Length: 304
Image 1 (cartoon, rainbow, N blue to C red):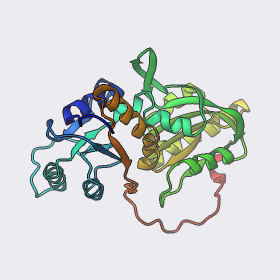
Image 2: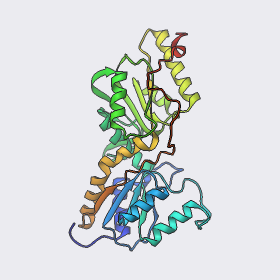
Image 3: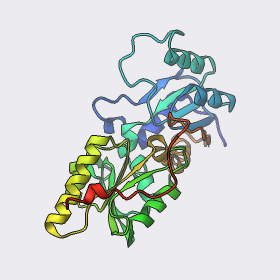
Image 4: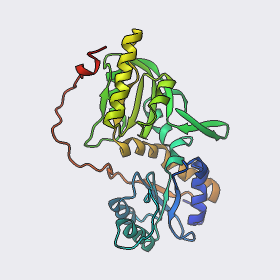
């Protein structure tokens, strides 16, 4: 680290060069959420969610800025008093002179953002957005990624690759499809993705990797896939791989720590220290009744 520490206004501006706020969905409000614009920033720490435990850890680490993927406020806020946890977090951050900057749907779609980080980790080549929403320096940007593996592999082997790359939680991952079928074209949408099944079908993906798959949308998608495979005498697709939400999104930090340090140094002349907080912020702490075996759902395919 050399030179004078930049202030929070300068660092927020640098972050928004990497993850432009105009990339965000209309309902989303990322960017600088908490902080005094004149505070100096020398250490930046990263985490998936701005929970109380994460904020306490960031302050204990001496952070001047906490960068999170998920917002502190998802909906309209009318008070930030100590009666509510969000108000308590806000006050704690201000008292510690630690800002909070959020890269949510803007970071999802950005170059070397959340979706690309996961797709790269899974070995996808020739990537394109699953849903294109704009351009960034001539590159298409958008929700998710679609690409191909270097060589075909079985669904079972690819699912193991996903399990090996996604940070470990109590949840594990869930897989549905023909485990011995060869797959090569992969769609990835970190975060909640069961509203994009039609986009995945249009993409021709053999496998869809996402999170938070609800029972009815997932069942309907799988039933349709099995039915079409039987009707057309083809391999069932897309198979589904369901991952823990915050875990797959936190793969973004494999790029973000260096990318943010680079852009701050480029724009201000000062290279900040960057660290990641490894607290697992997916909400469940215990999984009961899960046997360690692969369940092939015969009922899913029996009518095909």
